[in-house]
Length: 214
View (cartoon, rainbow, N blue to C red):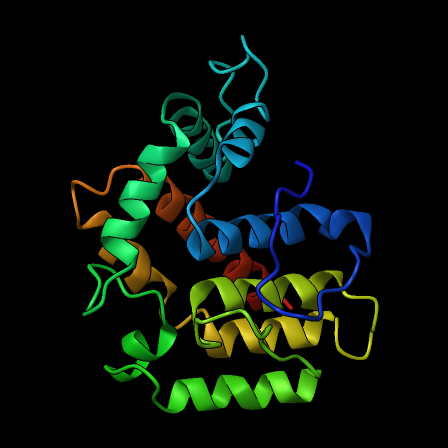
């Protein structure tokens, strides 16, 4: 799968490095994109085209492959305006949205708490900062996935390396991503983002298992 990401949440994102990490970086980038903005039609068409017509029934038994097929089906048969409506209804609100996408809420019970401070300290060490136009705080799931993408794909091996990936993931993503996916899946009407949550959960579970083997 080639990189579908059209906007970067962070100002400093490196080039893809080792070929075997391309798929990981792409998936982090896609998850970041889907939680940062509702997918436009170009992105949905790109996802839909990742499985050629006629190959839909040739399902791989791997759980990640199954959830990817699920997302592809929803991308094929739901137009961008429907995705936008669901995104805006559930993630955007002048008050509290139906689903909060910030790690501090799940780890500390409130927004803008110590987990956000810890993330900002980690990003300072990496030399990363939020882009000026970004309104979300650094504990937003899209921002965290972009950091992981950089730690995989960046060209500075002093920063973009497996050790930093493992520490950042375990400290800032692993403690709460399941709760986020649960929150999305608990809303029956939020059907388009159910496969996004399933993909996020399965991919991040695999990441955690892989880091545990280091």
